[in-house]
Length: 166
Image (tube, rainbow, N blue to C red; front, side):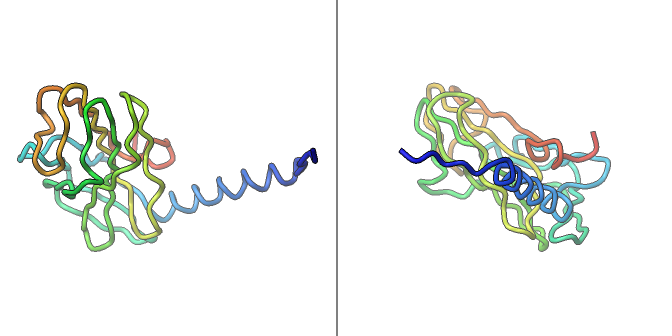
């Protein structure tokens, strides 16, 4: 069996590329300013919302978006069976369109992973983690406050590099 040896240079270059990509994304796209978006349950309980004006960069340009409800995209990719969890990444583009992008659904609470970073020009402003202990969750139909559904809201991206002023 042949041993693969990339040496320290190969290992280092792989990590440098990852850090470069993350740093470049964070410099060009993300939440800015002193106030966090304030991700929470929406006025309509089947939606999430931002409670504050969102000040963000998309592709290096500064924008703002007034607070408001954000609907989950209905469809099989967004529905969650009993005992499963999904993390929805809230992202905004330069036109102010806010999307909730689902990551891969995983069995059990705390096991779902965040979706990959969006393309340049989309800023991650937060996430909504939905776990269904005893009831299934249907996007756009089931309330985020429904019995047997646990929801966690997070401002910014899970890495400190992508969060607003702390």
